[in-house]
Image 1 (spheres, one colour):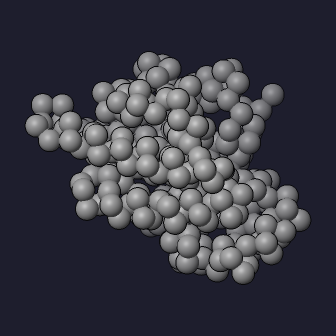
Image 2 (cartoon, rainbow, N blue to C red):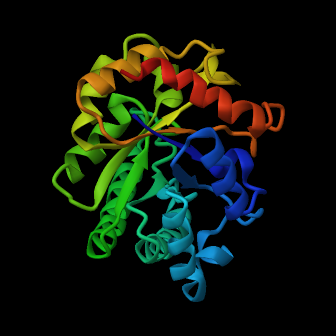
Length: 273
């Protein structure tokens, strides 16, 4: 089982501190979402062209791998989509330079099925994903659509899956929390839909609230059927990373990384052969 942790829970840390701490707790994968309080990958010192080779050498020497580069790209409206295309291309350039296989993007939030603007919004999302995926494929990177916002149920994600199912530059990042707010224990149908394109998984936990809301908890302290999900993935031969997304950047009430990160590693050990 391959474990990674996103730096969202420790985005004030330097890359050196991340590498040292992750190595100490037995995690070899780093998902980048902020370093040294810088959120834009193109502005991170360790990823700038003059530093790229040194950073890659340092990571190799420590047995660490950058597994995904997370962006804020989303396609809610036309103006946001245009900005996100630019942001996404920049992130793909960084990922390609740093040998990072994936960038993460959001579909974010589609209008309801009976809303007249839905078709337009869905087409914008799909066209934007296709444009980024075309560019990513040429640069040996994949664009991963995270199951996020309301693009985390069958009705809202199936259009993108159908349109891009054969695209080599496109894949899915399954955030188990967002889909849980819709499906709870009955996750199989959704999982079967995304499985052919699944590349990466975000691990987290929460208590369910009404209207698809959630109260985020440390791993193992909520209601998400994590054991069922992990065993289902492993039995199907999933060989990607299980990546802990500790959202302390947005939810400072959560545990400090020095508490939450080792807890995640210990929790996941129960699923090893």
